[in-house]
Length: 251
Image (tube, rainbow, N blue to C red; front, side):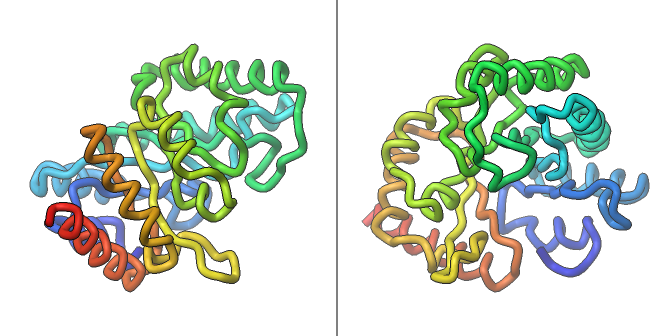
């Protein structure tokens, strides 16, 4: 993420990527949303460069919160962000559904009650008219099996964060095989030795990286592969490694 305007960042990436992830992480912040003028420019740039947009919904909403008022505020925040994303002609929407009230809150809930609360929020979001398959529930710090009945029932897609899987020491290959058929976005990044994630693919095991690409190619994966790194140098290193691996596979 370059320290510049929304449109400047998109124009820097145009020609190097086919999809840009737009981050509506904090829509209440001073620069949380593009202005009306910027939205028009982003729509025009999308058409001009032949891009797709994956729009990441806000991070604060707790869509399965045990606090009903907090859950409802979270739904309202997502709906506000969705309206802006539609104005940007978004193609997919990345959504967090926390096990607790935030990422890292992994207290084991009553699974039935958890899914009921999450389902109510999803129903309210889908009632806005958004296409269910365009809503991509991100794999966070818990096994998606806990939420799978909700994903399946409402016809949602998955944003499979393989960077999180590797960071958390989960079985990358088993999880990819299990969830790839429902995956519309694969989010990829490395984790530094100190535990800081969303760094370059230089910090992702090369053998696993090659296996992942081979698996995506063999499955004829037609979704988005996002290099989810937030610094220019991490992006450049990751893109170079991606090209190297693809050349190795093709050789």
